[in-house]
Length: 234
Image (cartoon, rainbow, N blue to C red; front, side, top):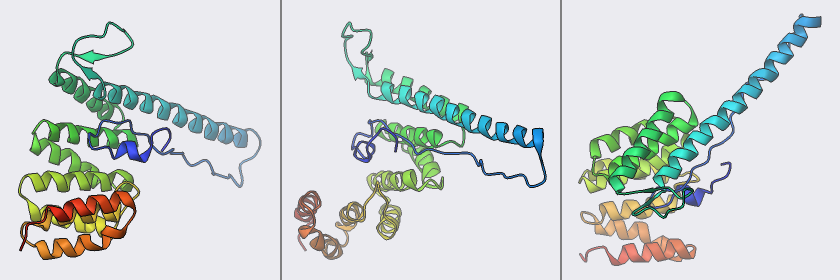
């Protein structure tokens, strides 16, 4: 990621900035028979395409940054500082953020920034209790083929399904993430989430999943111990 840490991307509130990886156009065309001015034209065209691609990426990232700034804005009375954006209500902020993220999807469909925008629209919808919309956006990201965000969307979907009582769907997603962890969703994180999902019906397996994590690094062990304490007695 360019400027945003992975920890920020995984924040529980889903309201931290998200960066993106650099994408390049293919510049390695090597004409064999073309000579003189034709070769020069091809080289200039390749340079121009690369320059244009980089410029467009900057524009997309700026649009994403503006949308995230709205999402992170304060709610309440105006501070009087024109540089500090505030909204009178959370609903007003939500509506403005949705417009900004949707505009990115409309303008830059297929880009990494559009994938991130869909993820945030899913999270915003979930926070607003719009489960159908949330599932739609998160499923799109989960199936996008962009592994970095796909795993995060799958994890969010599992939490959404758990809240809806769709434990089988949540369990399937989490077991998949355990088998295929990512930078943003670790095997330990998926394991703890799975244990919480199956604990009401299968406390023995939940304990079996959590026990090995008690001796892991401190943050994982603390979370595992907390989850263990919440498992109902058999």
